[in-house]
Image (cartoon, rainbow, N blue to C red; front, side, top):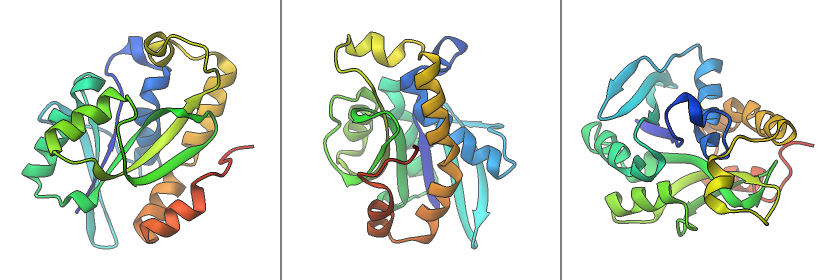
Length: 190
């Protein structure tokens, strides 16, 4: 069993913000598989499907970003999911808009959702897909991540998240090293 969690903030006021890149990504995976987030548990919306005889849970924590770990740890424990079968998808200020970064482990890089996950799991060793949201380093960090994206940036993010079903299919079929080699340090959109 695998748990794939896309991070974001719930509510209409946070739609089309940079911080909701994880929600956008996982929504595209659900749509490709004709799924709806129609189940609720532990403060999260989720859906599930089987892929090659393995259950895959897609999760959107519905607590605010900085409380994501509370939801994820409850799912992990309840469904008895190994940490090696957990994948977190989130926005990343240190990665250029239009790129993604895939990692096994690492610091939170100041990302409050990742900090909360690490606090609850007592480790920073878990798989993650970080979606680049930075197109301008001269900004107030909080206003930038929760502010509405200009159309140009939103169009780029849409193109990146359009690749979500392919990236997740690769995640389910390739070794993690091969997944990183395929996507890291490459423009995923042109």
